[in-house]
Amino acid sequence: MTKKVVTITLNPALDLTGNLDTVNVGSVSLVKDSDLHAAGKGVNVAKVLSDLGADVTVTGFLGADNQEMFAQLFKDMGAQDEFVRIAGSTRINVKLVEASGEVSDINFPGIHVNAQAIAAFEETLMRLAEDHDFFVMAGSLPAGVSAEQCAQWIEKLHQMGKKVLFDSSRAALAQGLDAHPWLIKPNDEELAQFVGRELHTPAECRVAAEELADKGIENIVVSMGANGTMWFNQGEWLHAQPPRMNVVSTVGAGDTLVAGMCWGHMQAMEKSELICFATALSALAVSQVGVGIDDAQALNTLQEKIQLKPVSALTE
Image (cartoon, rainbow, N blue to C red):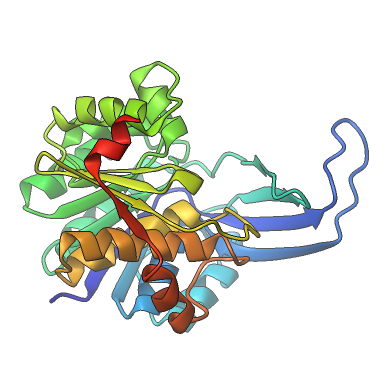
């Protein structure tokens, strides 16, 4: 069973999270406490995989001017740092978490990636492909990297026999879906964006996901928050339902689900065990601030409470 995995974060960010009673739009909002930390979807996935015991290599693009928090995180994780440094500063994203649990994301554009940096990244990616089979590409695209370029990288890895777990949205997702990713994880909102219609029930999500299966995507994982996780593989649906959780923050829950699906496959878990494990991991994530596994025993206990629902339940 392999432990080696590469996570790709093309547009990382320093996340500035502020907790407050309520956001006063157009007026002053007082933050009670705040936290600044290195993040980005692929970085979050790497943190969870590292906690699970994976041998993680991280790559993507980092601004050279404010890379210290990232470098320290990668060192603390024991990850191999293969990020391409470029001139400028990595963006700062703001997340405002209200007492109600509502989260407002203010995402800034990333720095501009030039042709030289893209060439350096491609060289790194091909070198890592020599001895890695699992690649997680997660998050948005920075200026200078097109959705077509991103899709080409996915297709290239696919042609090399690599398993690419792809988690993005908008144009990047639309292009990437045709590049044969091995696993995708849209949430219900992202799935609705892609199929161009509103999805109100798990049954509607199921129909939309099956439309994507026609593209030759082996694993389609749909995250539906409190409604759990649906997974379509080899013509079979599995639906895992977590118990009701005390939601502290939903930030990073989707990234944690991706990490769980990746680790489960790396460890060759049986399918029903795998989806329960990944769903438990994601459910645990909403009960804490920040990504990572703080309590392995709590994860084991929660996994036992995950209910596997029959496929017929998805038609309700």
